[in-house]
Image 1 (cartoon, rainbow, N blue to C red):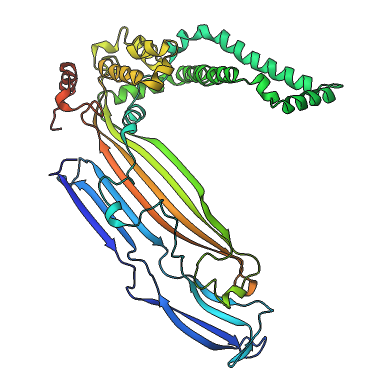
Image 2 (cartoon, rainbow, N blue to C red):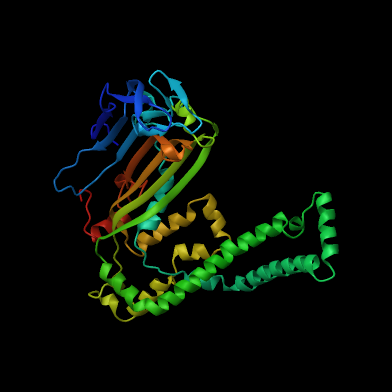
Amino acid sequence: MSELATRVRKRTLLPSGGDARFPFKFSVESFPGSKVWKTTSSGSVPMSVTPYASSETTWDEIHAGPPWTSGGPFKNIKLEFIKPLGAQATGRYITNGAGYVETPFGSGHMMYEGGFLPPGDWPLGFIDIDIESTMKLNSSAFPDMGHLDTPAWDKTKPKLEHGGLFVAIAELKDVPKMFQTTAHAFKKSWEFSHSLFAPNSIHTGLENVGNRIKRGVSGRQLYMAPKKAANHFINHNFGWVPFVKDLSDFLSNLRDFREKIGILSQNNGQWVRRRSILENVFSDEQVPGWSGTGIHNVYPLNTSPVNDTYSGTPHWEYRIKRSLYSTAVGSFRYYVPYFDVNSPEWGGLGSVRRQLALHGLRVSPSNIYKAVPWSWLIDWLTPVGHDLQVLQDQQFDNLVAKYLYATTHSTLELEFKQFVPFNAASGGPRTLTWTRTLQSKQRKGIDSPFGFGLTWDSLSPKQWAILAALGITRIT
């Protein structure tokens, strides 16, 4: 984000109503059971004691328009001090049947008319409510987006290959071993269950398990030792799962090859807008040490006579909720001559080449690499697989992007809940809820038509040739 092109906008909202106060009133029956109420006292308290309702800061760029045809980096952070502001659950609350009182105004039940204010103490260390330290460009509230570069390109780009038949054929030799590993696991599971629960063997089996437990060894440990468990995990996730997917893709391609090739041909040489979801994570957990029974500083729940309107034991808790939602959107263009009906390469071997591309049977650097044993482990540690795929996208498919943006929306919410079992005369049980929220939004774009991290100044002659062939210049 260049300093000259960046503008900063700030907005802080004060609590609505300024010095507004919410009224409350206490009353008593003229005589027990009369339901004729006489005011004993009344007053008001500040509607809100918060220094601000919300604060928001945005960093972005100014682009020519309308119409706006280009975007740029964007950051936004918003802090909501507390929601809802002011009193909550305003109503009438009447004391229990045994709660008769004698006053100069009358005798019988007491009634409170008003609402309830949120607690003043909140757990620290989750959401910093200091605007100066929170609302800044390098705030820790902005999650790092560097890990989104690769999946943003890989998941959003159009794909000519709708299967991985090249890799599947290369790995057919491993299928017997996969069957052997799976069969061995079933055999051991059967032997264990049979020895434990077979007729006339239950007592002996349980006795053996009991002896193992006494020695600190479980039956599961006998057959699921770390090495065997690891073998089964790898066999399932990196053997059967990819193999079954490749087989399913192959059958799908056989059934729908005309439709799929038709779409690839139609989009060939055209700008295609695509969108993908990169992350969607949510967590909800109780704040350790911040829960309990009774009333947690919610005024005036913890004062008399309101505390005589319950039919059970109140309880409260603080929860911390985190969410992260990341997406990518881009406009891509590829051009492959044998997918162009107006190209001489459409005929002749063009039909065969289209089938090879659709099924993932092309002899390419990426497919050869994927067929190498244990290449999936290399990809866990290095970007070799991604780099080869990008090379294939450029050399085989002439794939470029007009734009590609990765966006992230993160939310951190601190929630307070006070459960109050009001009696039937007061409307029954209620849960009072207040939240404090910090959320951030970010957007970043690619550095050149070939993706993130590759600037225009670092493009190779081959990449410039691809752009020239597609009619793309730097100013487009």
